[in-house]
Image 1: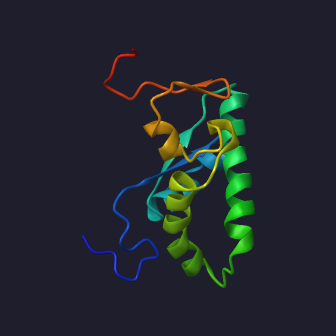
Image 2: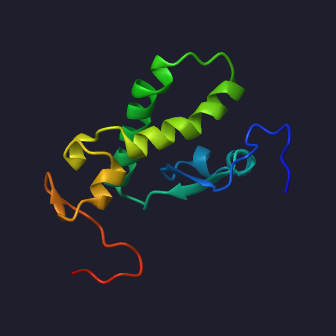
Length: 128
């Protein structure tokens, strides 16, 4: 499958895009654009402000720590940098709720509690 010339050329896996259930996010045109950008729309549960808060916190952090401090002359440049920024966010960026570890460091840690959070059991495994 070739996407040459597409801003998402070279992307292998879809990126999950978490949003609330607002009509703009579920609108047909929005979902069409998400598909063109290789995004998989995922919606927070109805009447679940905690889930929406997590999505909003991610957007705030991403804008502050990546978008706001990097020159982005055009959309193509932004799309090229997102993979690198996401890799850094998941592998190197410290998260206060994870004991100032990256998500990958947190998952690799044998302890099950950090700052009052309980790590979820990976799919297909029973909790110990």
